[in-house]
Length: 399
Image 1 (cartoon, rainbow, N blue to C red):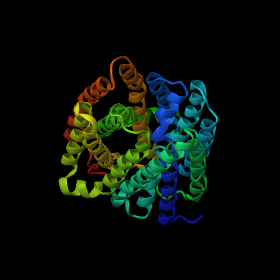
Image 2: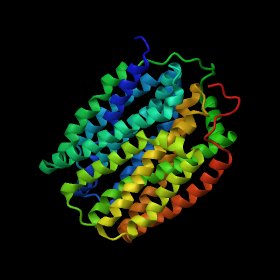
Image 3: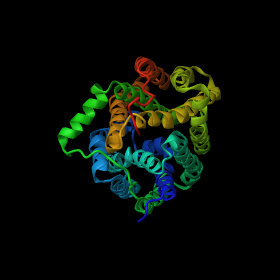
Image 4: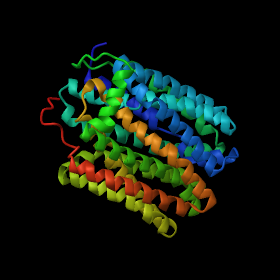
């Protein structure tokens, strides 16, 4: 097939829709509880998913760099369909574990490969300066899909909490023909001898050797882990303020629409305020929300949650772009996977703790504890992130 920027963008949009149009998320906690799981079990289950991603993120990112981003995305799409099919016929913790592992493998194959495919597609079309804008658009499409899915998923759950899983399996199927549509961009890369030695070299560069990549990756990972954690606090919070179950899907839709809208305009926001101020703004918004949310009475906390999700929408495309502009094509998917690896490592370690604190003490205590720990780590990493200007390309970089 002939390479086309438009064709690849369309295919990536479809992959993103299939990946993020998640019909099950608005009622997932209720679904788990209906199958006998506690909050500790739920966070433990998500830790299994995170551990799967953590284990495979870097190897699959490397696979995408060497075997091709299209192959990685296609295999991931097939496993995504299989994972939701397995979930549709699972009824207990260990069956859910199997489904989560399959979905974890699927996500690890797509994660990093899709962003690398997007950046290299734009680079091949000499449009890489539009990455933040188009990454924001791709992110927004995913979130708009998730928002729409929130409403539909809530309605489907009225008949049965399992119905959203049946329909989700069909949605996941969309990613397979979309992945087949993709064409590897014609880009020039440096030939490197593949092997474990190269993986170790890339990891050393990201985590220690390259100061820009190190602090960029650490800051991005902490921010990512914090936004992921809040997603799992949202539904218990709805329950705490006595929100009717029928409204879960609507609220989930509103929150994801806010992420999508913020992502679309992230490049404009950054252009107006500058990189450093933009980073400070969304960081303060994210971590102050953790402290304020559980302190607000009743439904007033939903405004804080909305601010959090708007900040998340700004952070996602902007932080991905900062990594891309200081990374070369032949290792781009691997480097992005190292970031995702750290996000899942942090969540896998802390997730069961937040679940335990919620069950043992209260949701309020768990959210504030998470905010204090994540906030402390974010402020330290943000200081070095800004000090080394990790959002700027190298002066010798000819990308």
